[in-house]
Length: 189
Image 1 (spheres, rainbow, N blue to C red):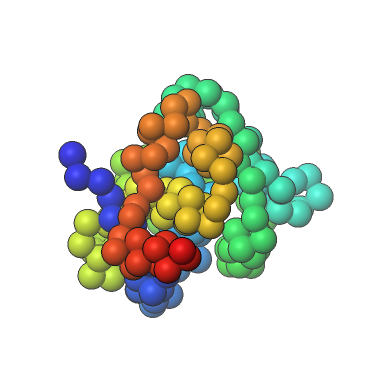
Image 2: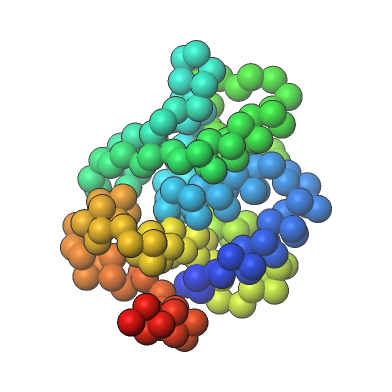
């Protein structure tokens, strides 16, 4: 099975530009950014509730706690919210017409039920297709997250833990290597 395409920084701007011109732009942008900036799987994104990202004081949380029931491996994990993702959540929150219930789904379809993993996967694939990014899927953001951390010098154990993997070999399969990366690496010598 071919792996999802890992976008370059320039390529990531393309789906964001498509999203900016679309209906439900704020929701769609947050879905993509949760994948890229937190490394979340599409099923994990679909399962998020408002209370997972917003605390009782109305502030964006520092971390998302995923229960074992919503993770692929069946192991609960903590996902940290960095400053870029915090800004994305605030941007999305500014679009809310009214404050949703704390237990309400974070992302809803246009008919207002929560997304299923499959429906959100289809939406993300459609957005990437509209941006002309063949091979990009709902898993592209997760691969981008892991690749970006690896090429930024983050330890393999930290990346493995953030990704929710139990084996380092699984994490290593996610890391993309391109010619420009190898060229830069040998120039360090």
